[in-house]
Image (cartoon, rainbow, N blue to C red):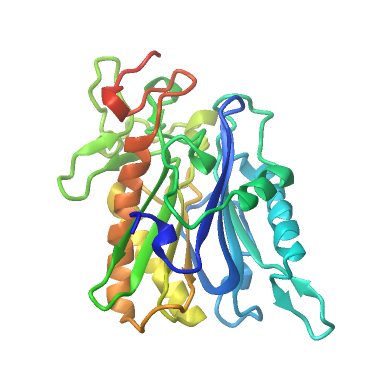
Length: 328
């Protein structure tokens, strides 16, 4: 076990990281197909093939999920994953014999960090697939978390670095649940166990401003600057249990509760929060209630890892090594 989403049999992860442009993408490969679901609660989403995952629609499985920076521009990078899978004959095979890979994707807004003209493209995502592994997963300021930031309700002066994190848990019966998340929230990241802010809007003295508390008093509620508007936390939860599309969709919804526990506030009009679920069906049967509860906990732990492993970039401070006020 690597405490990563790759602990789920059939899952590989690869990153493209652009620290000059301040962006990147992360690919979750399930080449042999996994039953997928999705739960989108943020009011500003940017997604691809999310409808195909919904119950009642034709395709039975998804072959990759991409989390990417670059806002809506970043969705183009999925073409590289399509090419990679098609070369290997992976996808949904039509009666005509044509095989079409099903690649779901979601974007976060990181154009306010680094070079606003930088965004992941098809070649970047293709290379991420080539380098994808089923072992330890790099975390922090990598992949889709490269340009991620948190605590943006009061503008860039008070923001901190977000990032990419992962975690996993094995149930007593051997079923594995894993999560991976790119944290790029307008709100603060909170440790659900203590209720304390771990990363978020931070004043010059190093004290957290507590975005939710100030919102209650109407402070920051009218934030409309480009930095405050550019957010979204994206996650993938995976299990080796066998689920149908309805169950996978419910798993995504239950897992999103972990996001709500660890990001405060979450699912706002300024966020495009989305959680994908993947079930590879390689493990033992499991109770959906247990899977959902564990997935929420694992996702909240992945969120904490994302900000704790992030590094200060572009003058934006990080939690890592005590960098609270950083070099603004």
